[in-house]
Each structure stands twice: as C-alpha cells, then as structure tokens.
Length: 75
Image 1: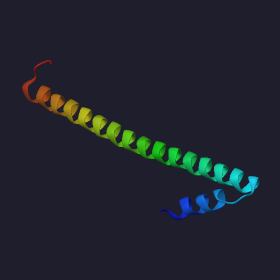
Image 2: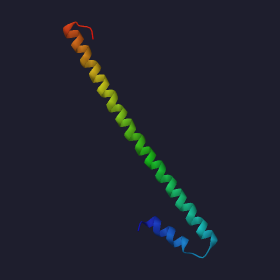
Image 3: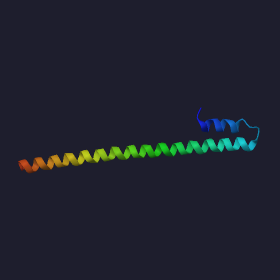
Image 4: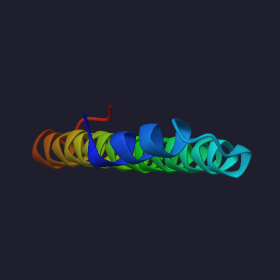
C-alpha cells in the first residue's frame, strides 16, 4: 500500500467526523493532482506528435521543392 493510501486509511479509521472529512478531502486533492499530471503528460505527447508531423511535412515539401528544381517540372 502506498504511503498516502495508508495515511488516508489511518485518518478514515478514526472515529472523528473531522478525520473522515480530512480523508475525503485529501483523497479528492490527490485524485485531482493525478488528473492534472496525466493531462500534462498527454499534452506533451500531443506536442511531440504534432512536432513530428510538422517535421515530416516540411521534409516532404523540401523533397518536392528539390525535385521541382532538379527537373523544372511543375507539380
């Protein structure tokens, strides 16, 4: 069990209503942080993918330009 989960379980097993509220709040906070982390990782992956797509497009355009220059033909 992760340290945070054991902390939450310890707080939740307390008889205090405040402890139960704190456990729920802590759980929601951690869950929300995980969502932001995943979102940021997905954004980074999307940016990398977009960068690769743009790089491939530039390469294809450059190849077409070179072919046009070499042959003098229009695309």
